[in-house]
Length: 271
Picture 1 (cartoon, rainbow, N blue to C red):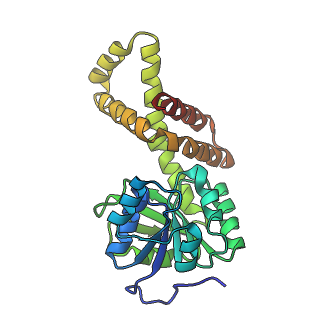
Picture 2: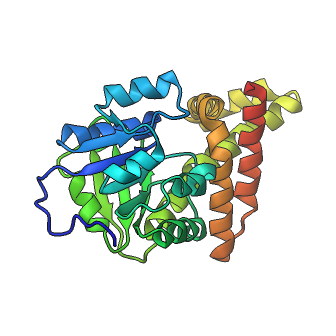
Picture 3: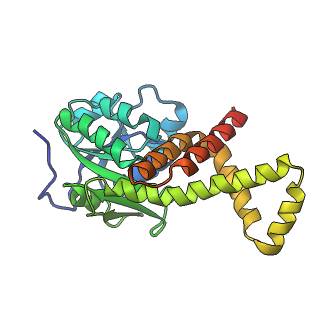
């Protein structure tokens, strides 16, 4: 039977599992611990940098994902999209509310939901837009599904603005896909345009033309380069998820298949 936090005093602490405290996940965990919730993480197979983030966020170590499943009423998954299904399987048998807050297509979110509900959990679809939440107004967590309002209540008064999407059970993922289709897709296009100019020996001329007619593009290109160098490896699967979402909606998917290749090349050059 699914453990429920429905009807519970919205100010009462809740045991939350966080898989896994990377930069975004640790910031989400800090929002929860700052509000008095108990947050558990799993140190098994995690490195010292992850441990430092977890400690700084006020998390307690359950040792393993199974240990989290035993202790938590809610589990929130914040991981690279290619790992979402594997992370869901790691808490097989969990009976609380499982929140997948990863950059997934609605179809992949549905697959993850099947994994966790088969084990007895309830599923809430989630999508995070913005940087790791440090201050109010910077970051939104979109939520959809039967228990979305209960999860939103955990973040009341924190730097993470939890918002309900009632357009369907996978609509939080759809919002994330549509948003990232532009932000990261346009970054990939900008990187490709500059790469073309460099390959043809006209990089300096393009930069000069940008300064005349598109003065914001040089700064955007520099920002896109930094972001792709640091995070491009985890955006490859996200672009594939967006492409799948586009195709399912009858839209062209080639833009984001190409964007995945752009970020794949950045990952190779950084390896």
